[in-house]
Amino acid sequence: MEILSPAKINLFLHVTGKRPDGYHNLFMLMCCITLYDTILMTFGVEKISVSCTDPNVPQDETNLAHRAASLFFGALNKYEGVKISIDKKIPVAAGLGGGSSNAAAVLDGLNRYYDYPFSRDALMSMGLSLGADVPFFIFRKPAIATGIGEQLEVYEGLKPFKVLLVFPGFNVSTEDVYKNFNLRLTRCKKKIIELSIKDNDFDATFMCNDLEAVTALKYPDIKRIKTLLLNLGAEGALMSGSGPSVFGLFSDPECTEKAKQVLSSNSRWSVYIADMII
Image 1 (cartoon, helix red, strand yellow):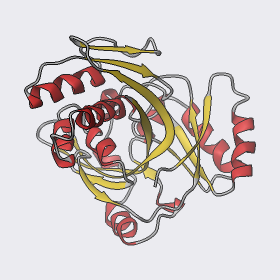
Image 2 (cartoon, one colour):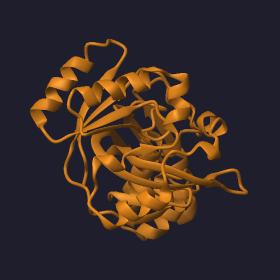
Image 3 (cartoon, rainbow, N blue to C red):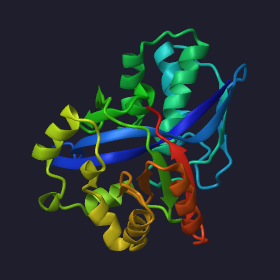
């Protein structure tokens, strides 16, 4: 079974508070994009195994896709095997949710193979124990996410922008970003934006990410890429998640292609054009 596993972008990310369990409450607008890993699942084997084309991805029991398969078989009370091969195109530790997407794809694929023993809500609940973004990738629709990101509400106000995505070539630890985050310095004003996003069609002026200041302070490439995207015609530009990937939203495909050519001149940066999955 072959499954496409998409990346995601955060069009808005506001940290609303810190929880007693150490996690942060969030208010986010998330959307999948057409940058995919390809997952091949082979059945009829004795145990769970995982391989990946990217050497930076663990290929043992710590891999999220491996953990997802183990979790599924445990819930099903069947201890069978599956060989998982991941052709990795989504940059790793880049704020794009690649690992969580892979885990969701494995849960979806196994559920399909075993003739849907679990509802979507049950799969999402299962996925939450693997990571806060996993339920969103099972949900697979543009969504306003609250809580730690697991409470999802369909958002229908997006128009089909072209997404020009730039990965600057280094990885960021989400845990470290949150450790250095100062709640008193949040820049995205929830009271105004929450009402605007929920009740209106999306506008590039909504774009805001409270985590951007933390990551950009350490990595000046983030501000540099944002400035370039805006100068090259993006209606808005933002870092995704905890970074370091930065994306711009374009209405004109030709303008997007020209901007890609300019940004691709930096040999350290990987540049992708994608569509929103809406």
